[in-house]
Image 1 (cartoon, rainbow, N blue to C red):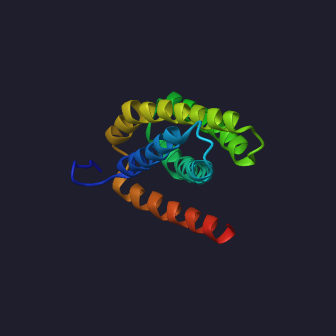
Image 2: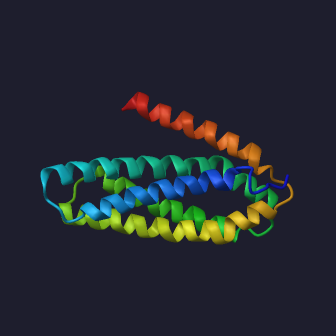
Length: 162
């Protein structure tokens, strides 16, 4: 099913996640290096939110988006790269969440995670999303609904366990 500019599809939903986490990284970066108690507390809050949002985002892509693209596209090398990038991000997220680092190293890890994500987002926007939108076998509007539902479910699970 072809999508129009007015119809929000799966790629639009994923890209909205990208923009939201980019804002969190920007706010963190503005506070990086600060040792003021309020800044340190806000950075911790931001780091937790960044890690949560990226974890959920990666999970919905890996469970729903990437498998559908693999089934609909012949060239899957971009998806292989995306999954490797996800694993690198997950490794860094685990280190950030462990919180065993000096404040300077913690800031560095969040910064590098942001750089990984920027790179990943560019590849999705410029290469994966256009291919997904041109794949005839994909209903990206219906997939958006699936992604939204799974994302809400994962966030609810997190809130229940927090």
